[in-house]
Length: 119
Image (cartoon, rainbow, N blue to C red; front, side, top):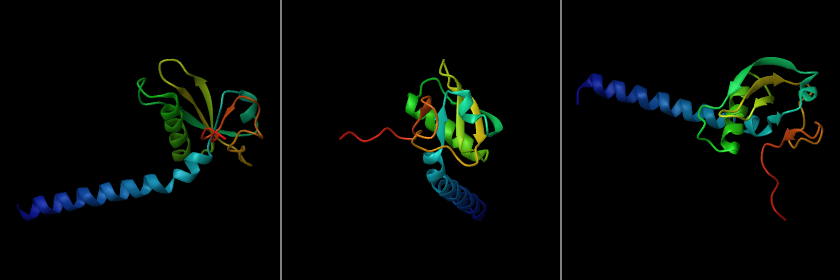
């Protein structure tokens, strides 16, 4: 193995490790991000940008988590879903104060970050 190949592999491994570390660091924010289908929930929030699922093959939960991740990457804490058709689309919002992660402070259209545990 040449020195150049070793250097390239080392850089690739460092980049991969940094990427994985960055993913883990936003997890709490992603889990706290509220998804809603009710426009009045985001009336007092600042619109940031569009979000959408990467594939129509994902489950609803995976798709919603992708939207949450994209919202956090844009500095948001709320997603207003506009379509659940072939792909899930919506808009990221920054709400201050944030909507409750369990949807209780939002109207009935809010979707909690995780389903409540069965009793």
